[in-house]
Amino acid sequence: MSLVVAGMVAIDNVRTPDADHSELLGGSAAYASLAASLFTEPVYLVSIVGQDFPQRHFDTLSNQGVDLSAVEQAEGQSFTWSGEYSSDLNVRSTTALGLGVFENWTPKIPAQVTATTGCVVLANMSPRDQHQILDLCPDACFTIADTMEHWITGERALLDQLLRRIDLLILNESEAQLFTGSNNTIRAGEQLARAGSRWVVVKLGEYGSLLFGREGELFRCGAYPLRQAVDPTGAGDCFLGGLAGYLDGQAVEEPTSDDLRQAMMRGAVAASFTCEAFSTRGVEQADRVAIDDRVRQFVSIHSTV
Image 1 (cartoon, rainbow, N blue to C red):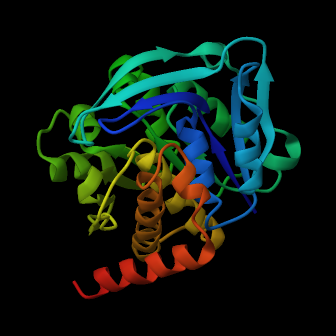
Image 2 (cartoon, rainbow, N blue to C red; image 1 turned 60 degrees about the vertical axis):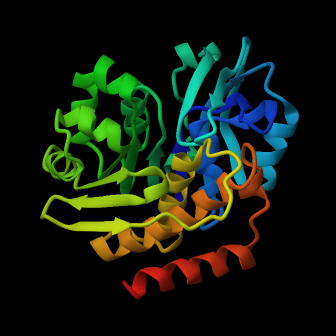
Image 3 (cartoon, rainbow, N blue to C red; image 1 turned 30 degrees about the vertical axis):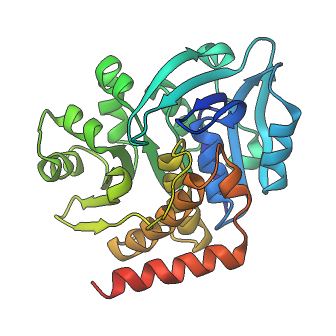
């Protein structure tokens, strides 16, 4: 079975108090597909880029085992994002944003990909596009969707419909509270778990994540402990990709809470590599020995709690 990751692929410009980098590989689906490729194959990336998209970014993705046969290149500019972090890397601001060719994208997936689809990851993009991807993958065994504040406030009806079509919703703490109108994260997670999808994961940044199940399941996963973070851009997307990649690699079609706990730990490990370098470079440099070592350490930490 194949893993499909659909969403934005971008050109990023990132500034931190210590460095300033431009024309980086970015986008939620790029990060998620690279993280998923640490744990499973094949990983098919579904997206669109413009004629300005650097060849080196295509090479990065393909060299890491991401299949690009469903990535369309169209006339126009690629999705671009520019952001700046404060001395507290948990705080960032968007300084420029250009949708480019992504604004009018109609997703397309080759038949040979949908014929073998196991898990589908709907990375951050409009609910309209997420619905279209699901329509193209009717035989998917397990579906995961991410979202953001813009869609919660601007396309709520479509997002509510999406919840009834997916198995797992992933969003961060402020988004969960906005979605439900609750300022208590536990109540927000429980409410979302009853709203449609079987499972909900609420990301807590450097404090880890929470899993909620429709039957009252609750689990807290910490973040992998890092001594230094360089660039947290894409960490949440890599958490998503690592989680999905683990489930796909284990051929889990209907995961239990125990399966998802293990998957969340792999997601946390994938996110840790991301934070150690700009753009996707940390994930690119992660080899099997380093991945297995961090997974062992992380599982050990949680097994002693």
